[in-house]
Image (cartoon, rainbow, N blue to C red; front, side, top):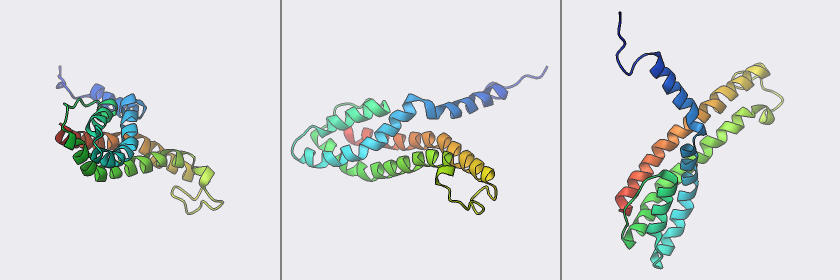
Length: 167
């Protein structure tokens, strides 16, 4: 009788496919989207507030803890200003990728609503059904499955930066 090594086989592959398919519908994925949308305006607002003596490090740690689930130890007062300044480029990139990537999902699923009368040159054309199917599968479902994983990677970078500067 042949034995299958642990961690291989159809059960593992099926579990991985289920995990990928479920990720867009998890609360953690949407908390990361919330952090991506809030981190930039909060970080920009924290720069002048930190100069005025506000506890911006505490606010930023609370944001990381609430949305990314990372526990950070108390920081110095200068940590909030330093993090707000250093994280701005990453927060800008994360906000752009999040907004653009997630907007592609409904835009491509609803492709017929934005398609003109001539769809013969559209990807998946020359038929209307082919163009809609291509946009829905590649642009809609494809980005629906891809965006949570991009968000996970960007959130890991943001958590690492927060640990380095807010601890």
